Each structure stands twice: as structure tokens, then as C-alpha cells.
Image (cartoon, rainbow, N blue to C red; front, side, top):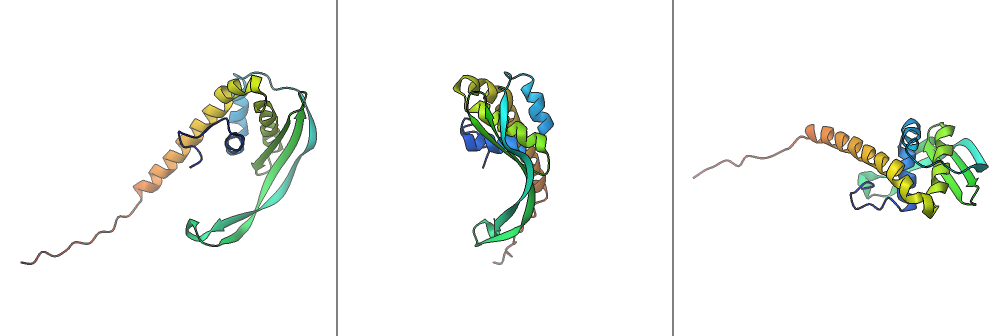
Length: 153
């Protein structure tokens, strides 16, 4: 599971996944308590495009194409020379650029701990709580089948 308590929030794939799943407004709100992000230059985008979604039957069967999804992407270089990439589902170009800026800043060891604490950790907790609520709701609707054995002597 993505947000297992043992998940290392300092791993780049983890923070990119959290930032991509979070709401752009929530990211911006969390940034108010974080250090200022460095200035940047856009290398690509922000722009929208399409990506193919793949799935597996039962989670373990052969992969097949489900369909396409709209994504926004952006690549930036900050003033320290670090390159950040941002992807988000939908057409929110501001979200993709924000993810790219934070990605570049998180690669800076000087800023990483403060950004993890101010932005990534709170967003990860919100995503985990949202997932737990959905799982609890699904669990409440689970139908349990059982068989009564007839007792004969």
C-alpha cells in the first residue's frame, strides 16, 4: 500500500505520488508553513496530454488497456540547477507546475526535511485518512456468506 506507516516519505517516487494525489489548493495551503520555493525556469509545459491506463483482471491476470486519461505535466529547473517533474490527473496546469517546483525543492538536502514536515507528511496523512474512510465504508457493505451445518445425531 502506498501510505503504509513504514513508507519512506523521503523516497522520490513516494513524494511524487503523494503530491500528484493531493489537491492543488491543499498543497498551496501547506506551503504557507514551508520555506519559500526557489525561483525556476520552465523546461516543458505546463501542458495537457493523454496517458493509457492499464489494469489486470483480479489484480494478477494479464494486463489490458482500460482507456485513456487526461494528465497535466510540467518540467522545471530551479535556480540551484535541480530539475523537477510534475504530473497530475486532469487539466490542472497549476497543480502540475506546483508538483514540479516542490519536486525540485525536495531534491535539495537543505530544504528537504522542512518540506517533508510541512507539505508531504500532512498530505500523506490526509490521503491515508481518506483511503481508510473509503475502506471502512466498503467493509461495512461486505456480505459474509456462511453455511449452517445441520446437526444430526
